[in-house]
Length: 337
Image 1 (cartoon, rainbow, N blue to C red):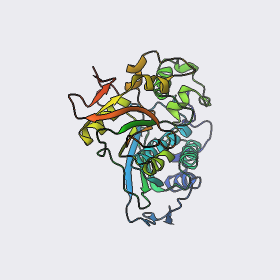
Image 2: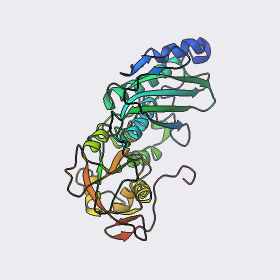
Image 3: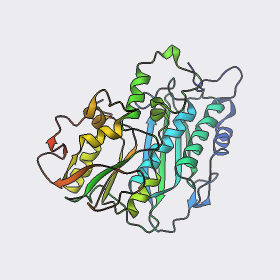
Image 4: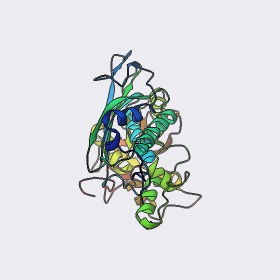
């Protein structure tokens, strides 16, 4: 199964056209940042920073631990690379302005795959963060596909929202992408893991499925800024599992977060059906790329945020469920998976 990653016939590859033509094929399909002063084509890009501060984050996707080429098309990989980085900017209350993308690809990679990867990046930026562009990067040769993006964002003269601002008495709320239920991405990964490789569709998987949530996540980027205006006291991108990421807010803020199981089940329900693993499944499910935030107790929740718990004084456990400590944190740790 090539899924768009292998050249067919006499199709040009990175090796056959060379670095400069390959870079041109890639950059020609990328959107321009609204902050651009000088874009791709020089040793570095130049971006305007009217606020005087820049939100900066970086994330990578590596063939093997993060994706399989027989699961993910080049388009899928480009989309996901943009999405996971844009979500991190949003989690700081920032407005994404630009991505810098570094690619390490086999010499045999077809130019068409490079173009599809660019299309995935461009479409994700257009849908999730209009005005955010791709302003340069690097192309290197590697036997293993590795893609890295550095995302830049603007606070637009607002204060950043960190993990350290939650206070006892706050409420805890979760926002997910439109039409998404808690745990969808994890269900998609389980579906892919159990799907015979010889039966995987070369044209990619259809939209609107659990698989889509894993391969092409749609984080609620716009709710990052909405959370700031809604008075958010802390916030985090939920990418490693709800319990694990909630514990990061709890530790940074020196509080305890008490999650409500009924609320989690309501957000995790699919077509009226509770998840097979119940609350435990939802607490450990990774890669939803939602936003978990805390707000003052009397705040009106903005955007797609839904109430999932409360903040308490620091206790014996950073995270509780219905007032009881978790038996196990669960979630994703790449070095212990």
